[in-house]
Image 1 (tube, rainbow, N blue to C red):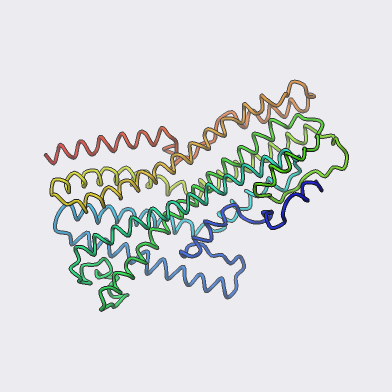
Image 2 (cartoon, rainbow, N blue to C red):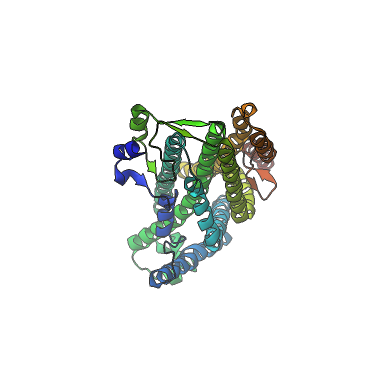
Length: 428
């Protein structure tokens, strides 16, 4: 272990008490739905005031404003645009408020992710963990940045279209409709459209970064399953051979995660396979606990999310057809961007659930690969217990009715296509 530490720069060590999702949480802190203060003090209550302001003024009043605009539309195309936006805002607000009210559950999930690093592991486990968690953290970070950039570009174009048809009148802007116009008494058009763009974009970023947090949980849960499967497969080893300098050098290129590890001054260390397997069973129980808390937080929220995604794809598809017949290219592009956002969001959730399904299904194969037949009867008895726990793969569901998987994604797209075709025939 001394050789390993000599090869690793201290600044590249990831602390054992730091959250894997720290980047996404920092973004959500800026957007008002994650309080970074752990203890109740002045900073904590100031941020609570900021959260209340954000929820009431920016989130709730924006929803009411879009509702008012939908009720005052003059044609079916405008109504479909405002209605689509309204249902998205309501769903995103529900997810945001769920996140705020389940703060203790979120903290518990973050803590359980770090549980595995507190149990003793071999250098092989450490090296594998470093690679898996580095990739998982990078993937969740890239996903957060990517969706934020895509959404910002969409709103730039969206407000370009609003500016194009507003005739420089504040009343034609979203912020110029009640009740928002009573909160922001603005007389300068450019100031009004700038504030409108900022608060509307921040509301959209809040939604997509919250989705990025959900994806981050699923990606890191997949990472935990990968680590578990690796530990299970290696659990029957009785001797630990110290790693070579080449392996140490390769490991030093990724993030080093602080953890409990077996120290050894000799070339060989005797391991207890039963202890290793019991730790794996405990790790699996912690993974089940993460999934249980995740379902407790989002089970009821993800069901309307799937329904709304289906509805949005249908409405936007029909809207594109109606606008195209009317000859408005800008409206068609806005509807297309909105539909692609709904499809990407649906794909992200279903892909996240599918990777959990696939990786958890590999646990039983890892057990069979652990050379259990060469171990004593205690080890084989524990293998039987473990096999009974992992007989069925882990499933992330929406409301307990629909599984988040590739099959669900395909079925929703098929139903959306059928819905657009039926509505088009009715329109004709």
